[in-house]
Length: 402
Image (cartoon, rainbow, N blue to C red; front, side, top):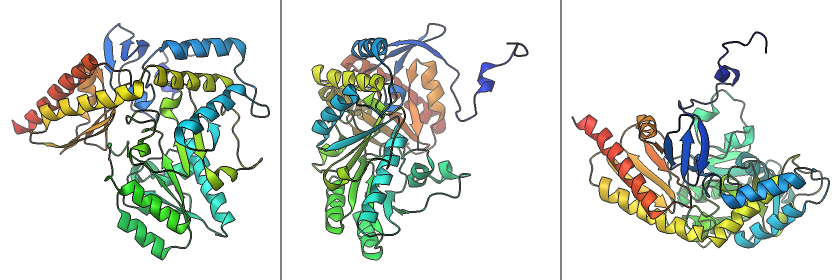
């Protein structure tokens, strides 16, 4: 195009990301190759998205077959693949009905709207939702407000009214809110706080939240966007606690990279949405639902949820053996293939150092090395992650000691 010679393509993108200096050309399984042909082990899965790894044959086949038949018609009409996916998700989650959208933020937005409908049905004029400190629920205005991170909220005021914040993993704080507020109608909580650094609550926490919700007529809404779809070693992370949710939100691993989100509800909460209350032009289209159905097929046929549990234990134990005794390592948190190595100081520099070593990791919360490898990861590949991360962290901590 005239006048664009020498234009840097990256300059045409809004500056919303500090992108690393690499572009990937292809992927296969847990591996990615950049444009120069260098190979990388992906221990981040596109931030817990590609649970089946890259170019999984089931997903590839489903996408190609569906794209050759039909991509989109809109929700003005029945969508057979959407109905099939809805049945299967409700069965595995214990929920009754589902609304399909395109992302985790949209799924949580739908949950927030459900809570407000629930509150108004109870005669509450200004319904409020309890959300947690250090939570992350998305970047729409409502989900940004629900997110417990002032850094990502700054500059977007005025935020949305109707949220009450509480410390995570603190039942006494919730009891105090119940005693002092008559407007609360729901609790929105992550079973594992992913963006905060793989923060896992005490064993009885979710059961206690469930009991409070039942006592006060609140909806228990669980954000399983990062922790769901088998990553924790169960279909959904809250199943480890043996609790039932009123609302569950999913996205990320549901489509293995194809954008899709879901807001599931049971009981009275499943009946709140009526025609005209909510919608999505692209949500639940045939292409996205075919991809998600292929993901479910692979998770079941290849025993990948069991693999996530086993490889997660291996990853935790390997890192613990190498790092737990080092000064500067606070703890190693894990539930399945949700793993965080917590250091005593900021360690963002490790992301680029790992990249140089051919490993993709992430640092979240400033000082937590977050590992979210694909659920297909093998024993040998986990050992590679353990060795590389162990060497990187030991070297990093040794610099300060020197």
